[in-house]
Image 1 (cartoon, rainbow, N blue to C red):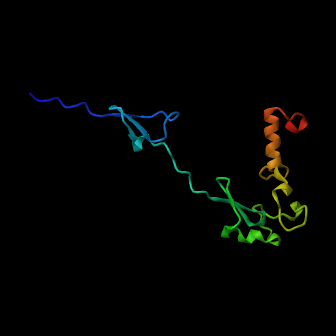
Image 2: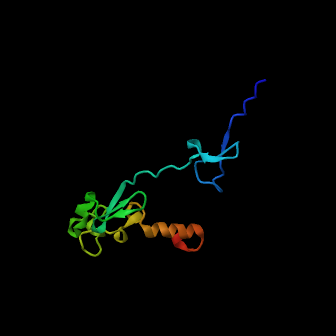
Image 3: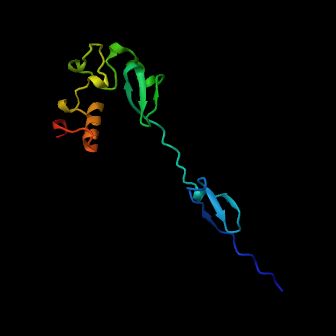
Length: 134
């Protein structure tokens, strides 16, 4: 008489609220790793977004570096390189660099300044009211 073969061992992916990504729960009661259960996606390589004042490189992931050679010319305050196009009318302190806080923004048909973005958010959230929110 032949002994019946045991049923095949199957698995299901563990609940991410309880288990680490990649955890497999096998039908025989064991726990292990299965690539199809691994939901980890490595972050994309950060890309240089712009060179800020002082030659600081600002990347798309929010990190920054003062040693990126792509921003070496921005380290010289007289170079006019700050990540923003140099416009003498916006150089309010006359240092040869247009810093973010010196930019004209929407009033000049440019991208909004950080202050304008903060104002818009405050108006949308309702904690800023008045004619500036129109």
